[in-house]
Image (cartoon, rainbow, N blue to C red):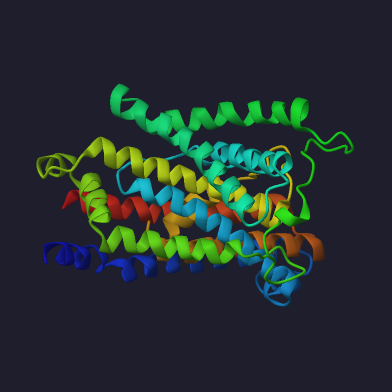
Length: 351
């Protein structure tokens, strides 16, 4: 009964939190409209291209949903350890190394029948990213090294190293790009909405989000994660094994970044090029903040940022919309959401 009451108390304000995020997004959309009006020669057409065009055909809408699923997976990878007070800033490197593992697995073990090969490759990508998280949490537990520093520095070191590996060892000799060869067609995920990049991984990501929501709110493991994050001393006094909880949770969450890399390779990209992540992990952090660190709310946040990405691309193609303005729009939304996030945390702390 106590765990049920805790669950109710924790989630009683979920809808209010999502409402606050929605207000922040609406304010951001209003600011976006003003920016579009001032920067465009045809403001009404540009506004249409940005907000409406991504929903007008299957290609744009399918790509939007595919991007949203990858952002959502990154959001889940960030919010899960954040329940413990562990904030992972190394998602870019974790996605990158996992995507390279996934493509090399497909190229070197092309003879494995499907879906067994895809499952084995996704597990390998998951494990490759999880190792980076495991090192970071061990450094935090036993050497008290801040995870904000360790995860970010690991990512900053891994990315140029992988760029070098692609350039020198894994580059497609028949192409001019700094990229690996394409995987075989039999390794590609089942498409859902052609000719877009939407594929079966979209369904898997939604299921993962639902599973994490259930674990966090309806299981003993989720209760232990919440208690360990809110009050480690109390959790220890109740017999909760804190090192075990931290290691398993952080390893699982960084593994989700690895799945994002594998899903990107097998679902939409089909090869790995230099700096393939393109800010995907940072969009995931933003989506997690929009969703108030709730797995279901993160779905809404991921959709918002995928919508911005799709709207920016369609507006750039059909009007004089600039890439820099797209970055400004994402920055405005991130700023408003972050201010709201820390305001709430400060109020809770004061109580």
